[in-house]
Length: 464
Ligand code: NAD
Image 1 (cartoon, protein in one colour):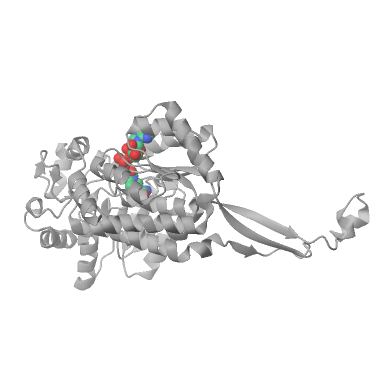
Image 2 (tube, rainbow, N blue to C red):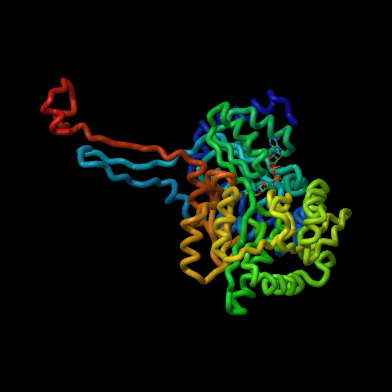
């Protein structure tokens, strides 16, 4: 890592560049977004290779989550950028005679993005789109755990961008800490709540605005779906929302399933069937399930299954744990002890507990007794249950009859609530996250109400 003095000098140069006004130009923003898109298109093969190296992601999954989705977001930003920049007119009360007002978005200045390893491109570039679109100078620090991806971002992406305003700094916690010691106009952090607390303490020192994109346990509640078609659709979507999304190493992956007891064996049998259909009899050989990122995470996941009580609840998988290849097979548990770490901590891996309840409505109480999830999934056709899930639970998002889909929607804010974080991004929300909404009022010199000026007299009070 560079010395403190070097960092300070670099950041000062970036601030000076921001002050020059270059990054505020619409054409500059467009040019950077186009550069970002060119990088994704021209370097697609390389991106796929490093994602295989870092996480064993299948190229199809890599394209879906880290190239295709990001290109979609860039296209959306490019299409709407000028409209977002133009701000909006605001209405004023009648008392404001001959006055107009508007809300003008202005860039915040020099912003810091710290991202995590599970979607090293997606989670670095989605916020970067917002920071650029809003006209900021940006330092991005990807995670050191997905080192091949981080290195491609640092060496490759920078060739497509204006490096006077956009820098990629590689490194781990020590580098992040050095960056956090500096003054920023915004910090955007994606990662664990443990590190989120460290980031928040650093932000407090300079009163820096902060977005925290954290994790937690995302439940999927499955109602007693009576048609076999609906059930099959639900099962397929849950499986892909768990094992088919970076092997469950995703902040919005299904963490556990809630289901009525009488319905659980039907659900489990169908899950087993579809796991085999999607990933083959031997997912390790087919390379269709991503690898665990590193040994500490591999052992963390292994330890979640270690106790005898938890072992008893494993009803599918749970035995193929290949340390050398960092592979863990898709695993299902039914009713592990609720006080076991697998039910108190975020799982972040291909282990799926199914928790049975007497009535599906009991799921509401179950969810409400725990920290607020980043995402909540509910598979039901019952409109009343849908209404209750929206009104009686709190989560970053609720998705009915699918999983993960909400992440791809440019029209929806993506972010947490409570322990799963605060602030949001994607689409226009990303632009707003990295902008200040400035209130602008324009008054004519003509005409004033006589009673607005002192000296104050009782009859003026009557007129106000
Ligand atoms: P992490 O908190 O360990 O690391 C995230 C980033 O923080 C990395 O860039 C890392 O280098 C940096 N960091 C680590 N220790 C630090 C320290 N002491 N001081 C300053 N910076 C430090 O998280 P992770 O393991 O990369 O990601 C997993 C967690 O992130 C999970 O909880 C997951 O749910 C969450 N997550 C959330 C989202 C979201 O969009 N809400 C997306 C992905 C992951």
